[in-house]
Image (tube, rainbow, N blue to C red; front, side, top):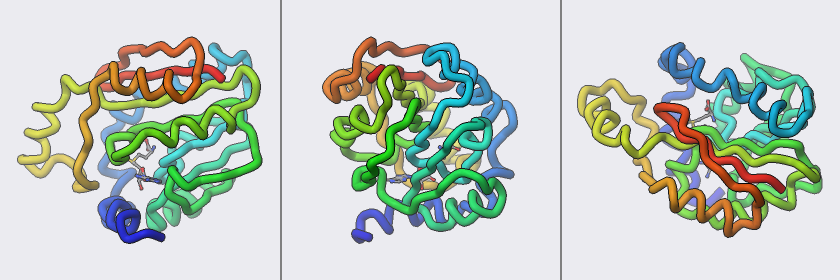
Amino acid sequence: MAKEISERSQGHNEVADVYDSKKKSWYINRFRAIPKRIYELTGKESPSVLDLGCGTGLILSWFNGRRVGVDCSEKMLEVAERERPGPTYVFSDISNFRTEERFDAIILVDVIEFLKDLSFFRQLRNLLNQDGVLLVVNINPKMKPLVWLFDKLNMKLPTGKWIWRKPEDIMSAVKEAGFNKVFSEPNFPHIYYWGFG
Ligand SMILES: C[S@@+](CC[C@H](N)C(=O)[O-])C[C@H]1O[C@@H](n2cnc3c(N)ncnc32)[C@H](O)[C@@H]1O
């Protein structure tokens, strides 16, 4: 794996063993509605899901169909395999991930803040089944001062430097990747970005 990738995964490797216990339950519960929302949007009760940047597999564990998780931190994947077996976990950088498989939903939750380049979105549409949906969950930029404060107070996990993106830039990246019916939903402290295949 390229040097830049191993440096990128270093932060998550170091926090992997405490990652789940340090996440506050109110924060995690914000994401609990994701499977239901995907069901509403796709009409599929057991969608096949590709989770890019799956971390410890938490969000995948709330789905009940075919599940594939991709992550470039071997330690996060170790926790996922141990604590949440079932999905297929793949050690890969998201940008290099290739598969012949097609999915009903592709999700990226709290991941793009670690990625310099979103041009890999262009490959994602080809990984979706017809009527499939892409979900990108990103922290609301209005949170920046608060996150900065948490960081200073050592209340933020030291997972690495975040890239703060404007909502319009994320919308553009999803549209340019060829997705249809692109829209965003506020889900404080996050914004959800949806695109259809
Ligand atoms: C903040 S965690 C979120 C994990 C999970 N999505 C969740 O919400 O619980 C970010 C994850 O993205 C992974 N990640 C960051 N950059 C990546 C890349 N280029 N390729 C694959 N995984 C990446 C990290 O290793 C980490 O597990």
